[in-house]
Image 1 (cartoon, rainbow over the protein chains, first blue to last red):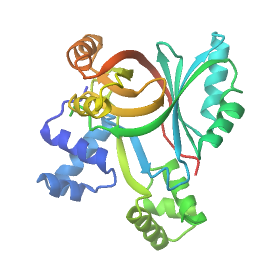
Image 2 (image 1 turned 60 degrees about the vertical axis):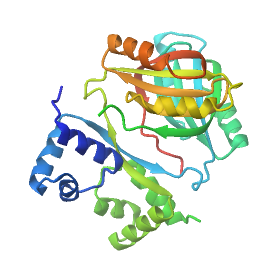
Image 3 (image 1 turned 90 degrees about the vertical axis):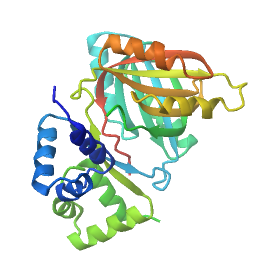
Length: 151
Length: 151
């Protein structure tokens, strides 16, 4: 695992906020020269500290007014049914995230839709049509906050 | 309103957020000048809120990820606000969502290992106010996490 000092942690925090910042801009924020900032960023990237980048968009402005968290329990479990379900669920464009979990559900999905009737369409035509789906638990997102994490 | 070019830019950008702006302009079929003018406008209007670096917490030594589904005591008048305010003080809480449905809130919590998780759970999570029930879902695998929207 990578060793981090306070400057590294500040760099990670800054890039988590805005991944488009240049080494020069980051260096100025943190009192580093551009090459020093660049070397540190390179080292963090090589250690795999960032999984990638993500666009944070105003979903409502894009006409996607509803986000639902779905808990899915499979009716039949076997290696074949898991694979079929996983392949099919990832191909649904309205499904943003798929996580395999342990607990009262097998999968946790994050689904976006234009509105509640549109969500019903996605649920009935797409999700409930997936191979092996047993019970579902839907919770409509009211508010969301992402935190910087333990850095 | 967003036109087709805006949507095309956002669609292409979110599909490969790590690419440079020159490549993005080529994929969108617009000039670099048009692209930067459009992106500035999308930012100014709040449609494109940010391009975030997604931290891989596993690479930073956090191997345990748990979704906690929380039921709150709704008879307390400020149950949601007070629960959220206290949850924000726990650095290992990465996400706080509130819902309409069977569960009232969800916390995404990370920990270095199961022993660390147990300490966190007992000392910090169970101390949060107004909780009447907590269910844990342990994350096993992330199958889809790009959070791309169907634009």
